[in-house]
Image (cartoon, rainbow, N blue to C red; front, side):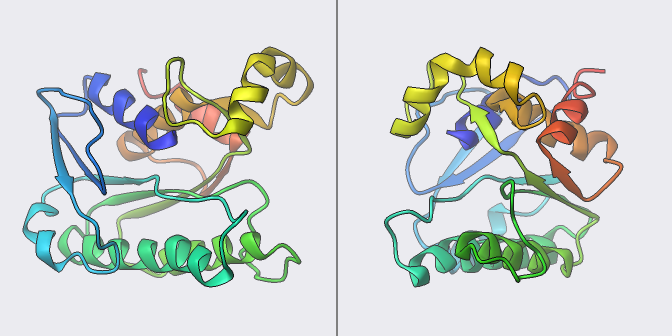
Length: 211
């Protein structure tokens, strides 16, 4: 859901010259700026490394809910997949800006009682140690799906129609999927005042995307 919205924002932004999308299946999007790579082993990027160099930014949107999967699988997807991709990219593109979709409530001290919060924190800490130009850790709370989005969890289908109410009641914890993409673009173009960005920070940063 987030990745598709970020992709569209990148394709529509005039400062983005080209986009490489790496995923397990085709996005279904066709655009003159877009090149897609289908890659199924996210613990080994050696087969496609030649395609990964020459980029200014990585917008890492891969993620999964911790509900209904084992501890080992959740950590593998959240930490190990992120680590393998980031290590390859930092080696190939040391001047790259890496933007990582984390989540509100993530605990980088690793002391939280919430398992998912500790695992997300582990991924964040790992990224801070890699030799990128910049790393931004984005912690959105509720994200309103882009209109017409197809890959949407049941929770968003139920809560989506109440977006206006959520925004009124929790203005600092609710944002649109479009603004996630715009915040990432702005971070790559102009940087951000801090490394860890909550929902309100992301919304503020998103306004700079088309400045």
